[in-house]
Length: 244
Ligand SMILES: *[C@@H]1O[C@H](CO)[C@@H](O)[C@H](O)[C@H]1NC(C)=O
Ligand SMILES: *[C@@H]1O[C@H](CO)[C@@H](O)[C@H](O)[C@H]1NC(C)=O
Ligand SMILES: *[C@@H]1O[C@H](CO)[C@@H](O)[C@H](O)[C@H]1NC(C)=O
Image (cartoon, rainbow, N blue to C red; front, side):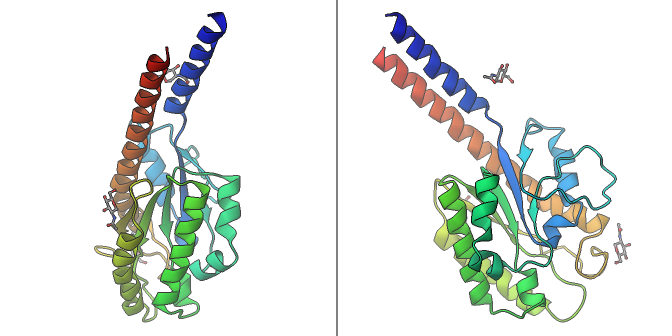
């Protein structure tokens, strides 16, 4: 009898802990995730909501003079990196091992196009590898993929738009209930002139626009994670009562 009660309490404690466990969010990408201020703006906006305890995770701590000493700087933005290289070198595998996540945002492909004029099909193939890595790390990973922002220099935007178009059917094809992929449009409404500070990276106005596109998608993903955890808890409690 006594040992049975202990078992029940232990189970209940584990269940409550699981329900309360912090949600871990990895901002993943290149310099447009690393040396920008949309992460600071996103973190600040979450502080006014029930999601203020969400833990930003990643090996990077880069600060970009965002004039914000409080925000959680952890991120997996890597300046200059190509999606194709990250996939081929299996770098995300190690990054997620060090810093597992429940939800991830990905803004990638800019360097593939701007630095090396890679084919859209090859970038998409790399995205598939990256999604597979995410799901190996966490079969329930919630994935938010950006249709990427335009550039202000050169003539890259036709190809950027080709990539952005290809992202939709690709994401639909890989979608799943446990690990949904949501596509967000960071291109439309973003100005290659007035929202960039250097032709490549967002300035204050661009950071605000990017944050405003990420925010509803991230909050939706957090809600999905929370609901799943609550129903798992209900399932366990029912099971425990049944056993008792
Ligand atoms: C879970 O969260 C509630 C409300 O925030 C808190 O009162 C409780 O102590 C937490 N429980 C655990 C096990 O962390
Ligand atoms: C993937 O499925 C989710 C529902 O689980 C849906 O909200 C989302 O739009 C789908 N994504 C794509 C790219 O179709
Ligand atoms: C953003 O940068 C562009 C020039 O690159 C400038 O025209 C615009 O005023 C800047 N806006 C803000 C809010 O920093």
